[in-house]
Amino acid sequence: MIPIVLMAFRRGVAAGVVTGLLVGLLQIVTGFISVAPLSFGFVVMQVILDYLLAYGVVGLAGLMRGRYLEAVRAKKTGNVIIMVALGVLIGSFLRYAIHVITGILFFGMFADGNVFIYSAAYNATYMIPVAIVAAIVCSLLFLTAPRLTQPDS
Image (cartoon, rainbow, N blue to C red; front, side):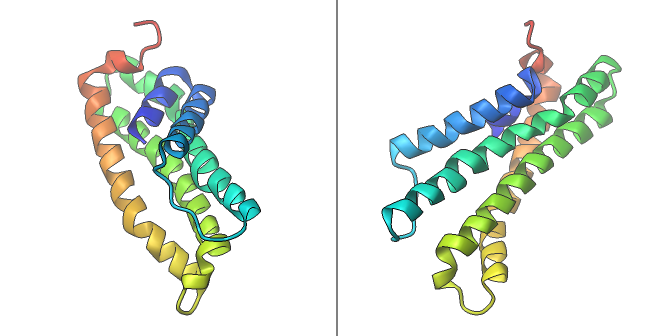
């Protein structure tokens, strides 16, 4: 998620979403995917949701770009961290929501009990740590190397 967030803060939402789509596509073509053993149509839909759309929405972290740049110009370190963390939170939550929906639709057969709780809990086991690490790394990276987020540098 870090390269997607970086691009979203450097170039904006559109570039972040395109970067997310490309990251998802890269995972597909390199074979780093896991699909439910269903029909071809279901596999295609799952891949679109779980890889292209899920990583694409991470680019919406760029919604915080304007406020982040204001905080950088004002040299308000606390606000910089807050804006980066909020951006990562937005992207992470939307990615998590898509993974939960995909889990309900395609992996519900593995659930013991409530499929929503199963999918939400399963996806939280990796999305919460990923979101925390991405927020910390991006905050540190953007604070120590602010030129990374300046499109003209």
